[in-house]
Structure formats: structure tokens, C-alpha cells
Image (tube, rainbow, N blue to C red; front, side, top):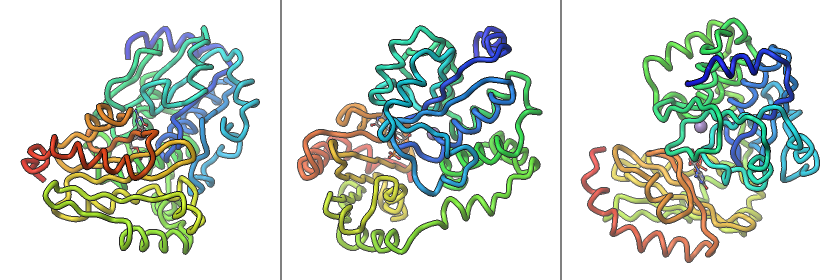
Amino acid sequence: MENINELKSLLSIPKDIVITTHRNPDGDAIGSSLGLRHYLEQLGHTVKVAVPSEFPHFLNWMPGTKDILVYDTGQEEVKKALEKPDMVFCLDFNSLERIDKMGELIAQLKTKIVLIDHHLYPEPFYDFELHDVTASSTSELVYDFINLLGDKRLINLNVADCLFTGILTDTGSFKYATSPKLFRLVADLLELGVDDNRIQNLVFNSLEEKHLRLLGHVLDNRMEVLDEYRTAIITLTKQDYEKYKISRGDTEGLVNYLLQMSNVALAIFIHEQPTITKISLRSKGNFSVQEIAKKHFRGGGHKNASGGYSYIGLRPTVKKFKSILPEYKDLLLNNDL
Ligand code: 5GP
Ligand code: MN
């Protein structure tokens, strides 16, 4: 990170700070934001975490979730927080477009912006950056950030619980984007008292009956396997959401099931949200879903996990996807799994 000393001196005086993260925040978005908050508060700052839309219920146990401001359900509070903060931290996203209307509010500010992120190709909207696409998660980078500022001793159990959760969820329980450095870092977190088994239970074993019924329904009735493209697709309609009484966060992780098939290199999940059709993409090996998301679906993300959206509705989006698959056929078939 360049200008670390300038940032350190800015942070040496108590400030009003807003931390924000991407829409549909996941474990890493919330974990990194709250972890950073618990650190900055120890430096004497007043910190608000503000997010564009609601976060999944399985994160409710994390320390500090009750004070998170959500733009979708509390516009006024978020607008007030963003009136004139002294500093804004943008975590786990790479373009202001990813935070909807909040992005417009932040673009107007004269305050310093710090980006901490691990997504490919960040847009230049910030003054300071800690950016590394090889990092497992933004939570890993928040740990590095605190270390870079010479404050490792301030990583207490609250900070550690939040960062562990972000790492756990973004790596799919240490399956993706791991490294020797990450395991050492996680060892540090365990030494601070993080109870990994407790957190695994809170995050992954917290489903209700309807979630498993939904999974059964999706795999039995909404899955299409296109062997000739090593691709599998699942779709969910508005009616499915109503019938199974599910909300957005409830479909988190569904797309990953498709990759469990040995012949599948590309997994696609397309579902209807109130105004957009949302697309989640996952891949194995060298095949980059980031390119597809960026080129065809206004999105982006990582090589093996990306997302995007369209405005044309569910069926037309599925059709469009099938029409672009031939373009990627060779890459998919030659991909070493
Ligand atoms: P998910 O499929 O879990 O929603 O997202 C997977 C990855 O793609 C995440 O890293 C997320 O940040 C990124 N992503 C998801 N949706 C979008 C989008 O609409 N635009 C961009 N740029 N990235 C997205
Ligand atoms: Mn992340």
C-alpha cells in the first residue's frame, strides 16, 4: 500500500468514518466491514457501517450487526451518515456502481476514500488502496491492513470473529483461494480465541426446513445440464420465491452444487429479483467467468466466481446465455479440471 504513512497520520485523529460494502452483502462483505469497524473504534473513531441492501440472516450473530445501516430499508439514516463523513472505507467491491444509489452519494463527497478489495480491475474512485486479487477475501486484507498500520495488538476477539467469518465464507470453508500465508493468518485468529467450530455451525448449519426443500426442488426441477458445454444452469422464478417463502440471501450457495458434478466446468444460476434478473457464475480451473460477466452481463468479480445482471427477464436471459455458450465451447472443453 502506497501512502501508508499519510493514511496513518489521518487515522491518528478521531474521525467520523463510514464503511460501506457491496449490495447483497455476503459473509466477507459484512465480516470485513465489522472487523474493520471494531478496529477503528479502538483508535477513537466514530464508525458507521452502511450497506445498500439487507444481509443474510445467518450473519445476525456477528458483533455489531444490529447497528448496520441498510439503504433499502433506511434511506434517510444512510443519507445522513454520508452527508459529510471525514473518511469513507469501501470494502469488497471495485466500482461505485456496485453500491447503487449510495455510489452517487459517495461520488459527490470531497472526503478521502480508502479501498480494500480483492476483485479484478478496480475503477479509480479512491485515494488509498489495499488491493490484491490473490487474497482469499477482503477480510484477509483487513487483517493485513491493521498489520501494516502496526496495530496487530488491536486485533481482539471481536475483530478476529468477524475476519474469520469473512475468510470462511469467501473460501467456501477453505476450499478456494487459500495459501500458506492465509493458513498462518487463520492460525493467529484461532490463537486469539476464535471458535471455528462454533462459527461453522452458526454460518452453515443454520438453515430452516424450507431451505432444504428449496434445494431439493431446484436440483430436481430447475436444473439443466448441457454436457456438450460442460455447463449446468439453474433458474428460479418469482413464483418459486413466493412458493418457498424465500428471500434473496436464502439462495446463497445454490450455484456451487453444480460444480460438484465432475464434468461441469461452468455453473450458472439465474434468478428473478424485483427489478433485475440476477446471474451468478462459478467455474473450475482456468476458465474465467469474470470475462463472461463483464462482456455480456454488466458484471464482474473473480476468475472463478462472478456475477452480473440483465433487464430482459428470466427466460430471455437464459436464452441469451445459451446463445453465447458456443463462443466459449473450446475453452470449456479444453479446460483442465
Ligand atoms: P455472487 O454470485 O455470489 O452474487 O457473486 C460472486 C462474485 O461476483 C462476488 O465476488 C461479487 O462481488 C461479484 N459480483 C456479483 N454480482 C456482481 C455484479 O452485478 N457486478 C459486479 N461487478 N460483480 C458482481
Ligand atoms: Mn470478498
